[in-house]
Length: 269
Image (cartoon, rainbow, N blue to C red; front, side):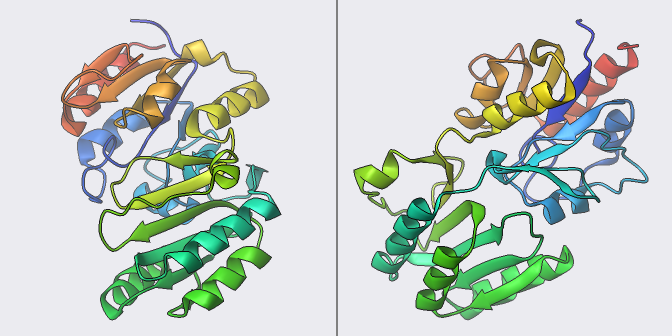
């Protein structure tokens, strides 16, 4: 097995399953990774909540919001890749034009831990208000989609999520579509970042910033589109029923990943 200078790992479906807390086995394996960062769709508050940094030392900056921002967990933002005003205007129009289809729309102001979000019903309000309060990230909530659309136009942000009530094919105008990235991780979520901003591109920026060779970085993820691109540049471990493109190794479960990481980093001195 190769020796690795660092590891950057996805969270959902990779280190945890179905929103659960990390298992003792995962935590035990991560303790052995001396240069560790996360590469996730989650927000900074959600990423920080998964691991008690007294137990697991997330020693390197972490990529959040599908590549939109890079933070030192527990500290400050290092880098942001914001959506341009014209793109935010276009997304605001999308929200307005599909108001009957949208269950949830949300964004974090650039460099801010406190979310702005719209919800369509009582159930979603209760669920997400509790979620954001649990990570100290509750900012502004509205049930008025016109108000949310105004916030989006007026506020700089690096990622916007639009969740539909059911599987809906939102048609983005070509001028807008050509200037955004959409993360296809969910059937009902449109996770939107600026053109050229993805988990892979932000990892490459961070490796250059830290002076790390991407080929010496171990990565793990479960998404065929998003994480396979990361694997092109790194030593990738896919967590999936079958090996994902560009991955060097595949495991089928989070538990198998814990055992593999424990073995790799017990012998990575």
